[in-house]
Amino acid sequence: MSLLGIHLTLLVGPTVAVPAPASFMEALQNVEVTHNDEGRSGFQLTFGVGRAGAMDLLDYGLVGHPLLRPMNRVVLLVTFNVVPQVLFDGIITHRTLTPSHQPGASTLTLTGEDISVAMDLEQKVHEHPAQVEPIIIAQLVLSYAQYGLVPVIIPPPTLDVPLPIYRTPVFRGTDYAYLQEMARRYGYVFHVTPGPAPLMNTAYWGPPNRLGIPQRALSVNLGAQTNVDSLDFQYDALAPTTVKGQAIVFGRALPVQTFASLRVPPLASQPALLTQSSVRTSLLEDVPDGAGYLAAFARAQGQTDSSTDTVLTGSGELDATRYGDVLRPRGLVGVRGAGFQHDGFFYVRNVTHSIRPGEYKQRFTLTREGVGALTPVVPP
Amino acid sequence: MLDPTSRYANLETATLTLPDGRVAAYKRRRFIPAGNALKVLAEVTVTEGDRLDLLTHRTLGDPEHFWRVCDANDTLNPFELMRETGSVVRIAMPEF
Image (tube, rainbow over all chains, first blue to last red; front, side, top):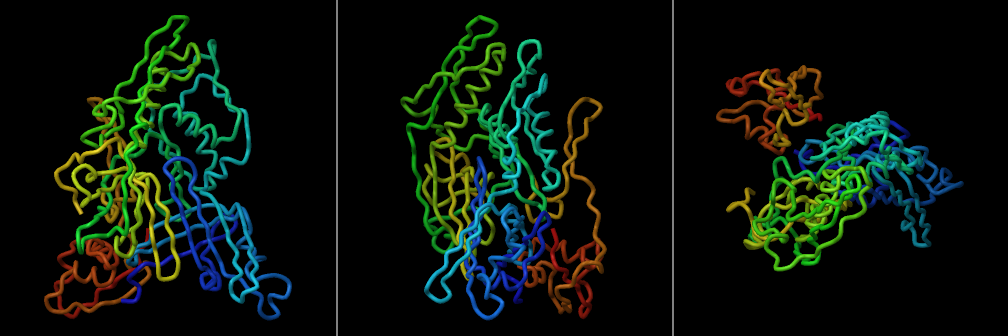
């Protein structure tokens, strides 16, 4: 049946995106989408433009089209075997026109970022007396309901209520910067994931999500089962860091020390912090006096947790037609065929999709806290 | 913890506090869409010895989406769907 295979759908428009006219899809040459675990994700659409006929007397075709204006919403859907999935939901922020003297080589490039760019437009003074992070985050996220943002908040292990008679935390900056700053405090991440339905988004604030069912395994060097074009692993012995220091609690100094990563579930049988002969130690950053011992400890633990995220990094490229699905970041994936030390489950940190007519490639980065698989078998 | 191809994957997860204080998570109830309101992708005639998973693989590309075929034909029991040779099975356009 002709509908089987991979298809791309482009929805574009001001505030509510509508399916793009056929002329857009004919001119679309290249789509690049990057999903990141921390920070913002981005997209780039390259259209071929030209001047032909009376309609293009004034300007290159598509350039003046009202649907492609900056700050418009762009939604990309990919359909694998008739079942649609949302690939991206974002806002156009940059536009590049490259006129060329070669016929047919002029291009219009639209670049944009995900919906969280709307949270980064206005600087404010954030003052939330006697409120803990999950409540502040829910308030901030729910004020962007017009983008279909649904908050998913995982509360940190320790919460301490700032007593207004001692201190009121104040942050100057955009909502987005404040959400990132609060996440950094605990070694957490904040990101906006498109889907599950078009024009809907999930705002996730919490530890890197290692729960859930692992995605289809990445197989290397397995003959006909191979679905990865290239894959390499780097081990960084300088990344794992323990934190040592003192927390001043109402004028009294108490020691703070971290030993291991508390990311759950663990993914490596030989985590670098426990098996490496020596690891780096850093000093605890300044914690405001009166924030409490638990808050100081949570901050030290967060620093250690995020340092172990970059110990073992795998990067590579795959062909989506061979893999048969969209590899999603912010989740788990299995690797097989790379030997005991580098097999097993990994956390997918970022994925870049590069789509052009007849070709769909995905470049990915995987991370984990050390070498050694935890399971004897990785399901395909 | 559901597979992305599951019919329950996109449903909202709700929590309930049990009388003894434990918190139980559960999926909200799924309402079956009206089959004739869905857009028709194809109509397939059942042949001798054909199976629902094979038919789904041929038309939708993945046998695990058999529940989409059941939805389109207002069938609650998947075993009834392919029982009669010569009957017409409606395949609907998948939705989110």
